[in-house]
Structure formats: C-alpha cells, structure tokens
Image 1: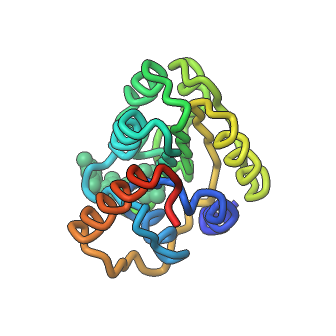
Image 2: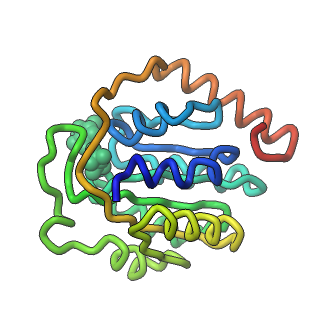
Length: 195
Ligand SMILES: Cc1ncc(C[n+]2csc(CCOP(=O)(O)OP(=O)(O)O)c2C)c(N)n1
C-alpha cells in the first residue's frame, strides 16, 4: 500500500478531528491532500507526536484526536505505548505507518525491517485495541471502527517506503502552532468537531 493512498482513504474520516503528525514525508503528504487548521505537523521533535496527542486527548476528552506516527518515530519513543495504555484515553487513535524505513532522512532500514513487530509491542504494552490494516479500504474501516468505539486504539499499517517528490510545505512551524491552538480553542468553545 502507498501511504499517500492510505491517507487519501482516511482523509474524509479524520479531517474534522484533531490531527497530530510526525515530521517529514507523511506531514507533506497530508498537507498536500489539504491542510486544515486542526492539523498539526510536529516538526523536529521526532517520536513525540503520540505524546503530544495523548496530552491533547486527556485535556479535551470530548474531542477525538488522531496521531499519525511512523515506525522510526515510534521506535524512538516506545515508552509512549505504555503511557498511552496507562491513561487509556478512548478519544485517542494512534495510526502508525510502518514503511520499515527512516524514509524522510534517506531511507535507512529500521528495526521493523529485521523483525520487530510494533502491533505486538502495542498489545504487550496494554493498548486497549490494536489492529493491523494493510489496504486503504481496511484502514478506513479500522479508523471508522476506532473512532466510533471510543476505545484507545493503535492501528499499524505496512506501507511502501515511497514518499512525496517534494517535502515543501508553505506553512512555517510557528504559524501552524498558532492556527492549531486557535482551532482547538474554537472546538473546545463550540463543543464539536472542526467545521
Ligand atoms: C531526535 C531526532 N532524531 C533524528 C531526527 C531526524 N529525522 C527526521 S525524520 C526522521 C525519520 C522518521 O522516520 P519514520 O518515523 O519511520 O517516518 P518516515 O520518514 O519513514 O515517514 C529522522 C531520523 C530528528 N528530527 N529528531
């Protein structure tokens, strides 16, 4: 599966929710599909998108938070799975696109290329619901299921190690940060998903 196709399949389902992504290729892919004020691309702090998503999910329990993670990023912060499981926010969906590669910095293989199973680690860490979805349609179904079940979920999706031609995003980090904060404030005030 191409991650671009996977993102396209889930975009309509996640677009009105709070979305936090890792940096690099997947951020550029989601941005290109259509940036929204309720999307935050966590630049520089590799591995910490799920930690940021956890904080938002706990602070805004009436809203859904979708984290888009990568295998290299998650492997840098494996303890996050235990922390997610410790707090079990039912409004948090953690999607891991596993391309077995540090694609954004040249494509060096990660430990998932040599046998590490991230879904297995998520299960053993106590994440309430762990799914694997390796086609765009099955991923979309899994995302809809997770968002309606109100259960902390990690979905691991194997994708090809292919990224966008350009990583350019016409959105400086600080601008994204202020837009996102205002979007969250509006969602909090109105008590509903982002228009
Ligand atoms: C602490 C830290 N280490 C390294 C980097 C450099 N870096 C940026 S993206 C990236 C690879 C991310 O890999 P993965 O999460 O698998 O996503 P992919 O690029 O494959 O989509 C690396 C190593 C960084 N930004 N911060």
